[in-house]
Image (cartoon, rainbow, N blue to C red):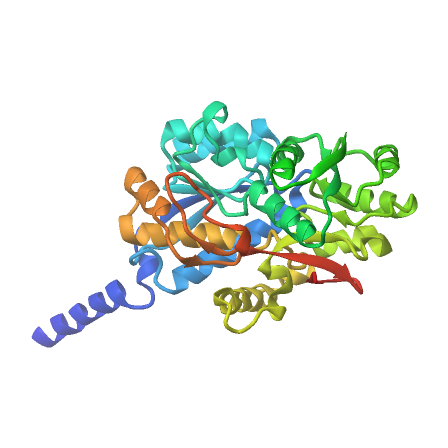
Length: 387
């Protein structure tokens, strides 16, 4: 009888602390909502796949102090009202401990107040700055984001152009929330960094032709043209610029380093410049770069899962990886109490991710600087480090 009890005790210990412990414990629910349909699905769908890949990896490594993460997935459709509906479900029905997403700046702004009032930590994967800006844009205590700020990307572009001796630029931006955010920072930081903005134009992101705006810009003879948009619109701008022989370098924003951009723009993409995460040119990084090994592991897991066949790696690919890992590390330290978890996320220092090395603070809920980005250029149909 004594021997039987010892065997039972041993089995209990194995189940409690062995490899399967994370799957046996009560899961921690993590909301994850992205644009899985609609015009931004080409970003949202692979972001969801990466989120699933990361959660699987974390759980295989023991989860959060023995508890597995469980993704509760929602589709925003890229629409603000739908994003609010999913956010409220996460809060009131699913009782999630934290949330990852959404995909677009507009949907992020739509749910910002919802999560703040519910006191649920959210790590967004949107490009625009307003989600983590205060003042008239509302408090951001509970909101974080993993992509670089638009302001950081603008500073990277302007620093690159300034080093080339270029000081007269034109700006063309989309009329959506993301485009307007870029316009704000370009018109603010441009003059501060010694640039003269000699032309400004805008377009609807669903427009099929921007020739009229680019023709007006060409007449002003800028030394470079900066475009701020995501999705197919960027490729249309590149094609139109080539058609009218713009005569100035075209610089796209940090949302467009993506093989799809080259596919859609074709030969018109050749020579185009843009700021990017190091992911898009990681093999050119020196071995001493702290991010290189992390990015290499990410690329290996992503390609082994076969995701690259339908969704080639682009600058958006690592956003969910960084967001989930930072939240998971904070959970390991602080548990799932909302206030303690929020504070632990905010205290993240030196986290080496795909998009950069994160150092968050109460004032900065992104934690990435200009040094987290590189300028890339399309050469021979591929992205390479710009010289």
